[in-house]
Amino acid sequence: MRRLTASLAVALGSLAMLAPAPADAGMEPYGLTFARLGEVASGADCVCILPADVLWTARVHRRPRPRPLRVCAGKGGTCGASEHAWAPDGKRLAFAIRRPYTTRAIRVRPLGRRGGVVLSPPSIDRTLSLSDPTWSPDGRRLAVTGARDSLAGNITAIYVVDVRSGRIRQLTDGPADTSADWSRRGEIAFQRAGLAHDPDDIDVFAVRPDGSGIRQITSGGGSEPDWSPDGRRLAFVRAVGTGDDVFTVTAAGLALRRVTHSGWATSPAWSPGGRLIAFEDGGAIRVVPARGGKSQTIARPGREHSFAAPAWRPPMVPAER
Image 1 (cartoon, rainbow, N blue to C red):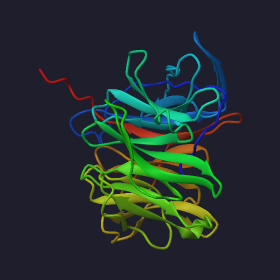
Image 2 (image 1 turned 45 degrees about the horizontal axis):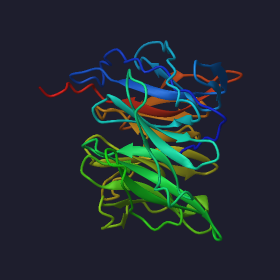
Image 3 (image 1 turned 120 degrees about the vertical axis):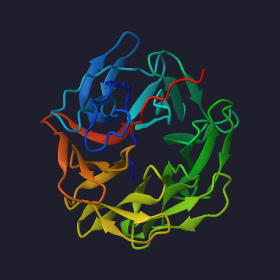
C-alpha cells in the first residue's frame, strides 16, 4: 500500500524540473519527484521533523543533483510528501496535511505561491480523514482515500473532492479501499483488501467517477495501481514469493507483464511519455522501461535516510490567452 505518514511536522522541497530525457522526453521536459525520509530541518513558520516530507528531483539520464526547496504546510499544520500528486497542468501540487487535534485533509498549492486550498471533510463529519490524492484528467477534482474509525475498526473507501467547491462524495463502500489512481479515460483504479487484510487477498478494482460500474481488474493479487498516460495499461504491485515486484496489465486485466525482478519493488509511477516506470526499491528510487528490462538507479539510500513515493511532474501547460 502507499505509505501514509504521521509526523509532527512536514516539509516539501525540490520542485525543480528535469533536463529533457532522450528516451522519454517527447516535446517537453518533465521531472521526477520523490520523498526523502529521515531528515530534520527548520523553516520560518515551522520546525519540520521529516520522516517522509522532503521532495527531491533527479535527472533520469544523468547523475542526480537534487535541490530541496521546502514548501511547508503553514502554521498549525503538517504535510506528507509521501502522499503528493501533480496536477495535469504541472502547476499545482496536492498533498496530505494533518492539523493538531484533527483528522487529515488535502492541501492544493500552486507552485511559487503560499497558501492554496485546503480540502477537508464537512464540519459535521470530523471523523473522516482524507489522504493519498490523485487528480482527475481535467484538474478539477481529486480522488482520495477516506478513512474513519468505527466499532468494526478502521474503514477506508474512495471519495471524490471538487477542488473549487470542496464538495466531497463517497464512491465506494469499502471497508478496505485505498490507493486510488485516476485514468485519463475516466475510470478510477484502487486497491481493495479482503476482510482479513491478507496480502494474497488484495486486488485492483476500477470505478467510474459517479460511483457506478465497479469492476475487478486483477486476480491473484494486486495493489498500488498506476495508469499509463493513455489509460490502456495499468501498473501495480504483486507479491512474488516473499517479495514484491511491479507488473502491468491492460485495462481489461489481460496481457500480464512482469516489469521488475528485484523483490522489493513498490510504488510504481508511469512517466508522462509512457516509456518508463519509476518505483521504490528497498529505499532507493529506480526507473525501468515500461516493457521491462534493466533498471536505472536515480537515488540511493544512505545510513540515515531513504527515498520513497516517486511521482512524475507533467509538462507545464501554458495558460490560455
